[in-house]
Structures are given as structure tokens and as C-alpha cells.
Image 1 (cartoon, rainbow, N blue to C red):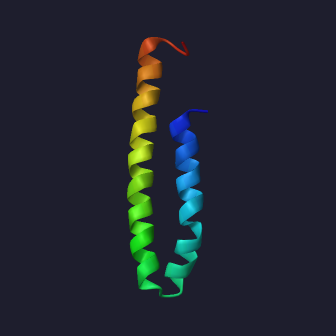
Image 2 (image 1 turned 90 degrees about the horizontal axis):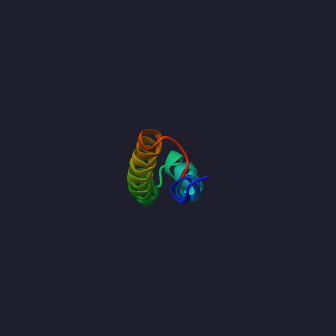
Length: 61
């Protein structure tokens, strides 16, 4: 697993409690979830770039 993938998993886990709080109407939690999801998006994009580089280089080096 790549370091970015591990960070992605950690980011999703970190936001789990705030998602539950947001469902109950906690407005501050909704802001934290939105920020957390932006982090997830950025990490996912980094992983995508890594995989393209891996593909283009012909495999694991």
C-alpha cells in the first residue's frame, strides 16, 4: 500500500464520527465533514497520479 492510500483510509476514518453528528443536525460537524471530504478528494487525486506513474513506468520499481 502507498503512503497516500494509508492517509486516505485514515482521513475517512477520522471523519466518521462527524458524519454521525452531522446526521443529527450538528452544524459544526457538517463543516468538519466538508473539510474532511476535501482532504479525501485531494488524497484520492494524489493516489490516481501515483497509479498513472506506476502504469507508465511499467510496474513497481
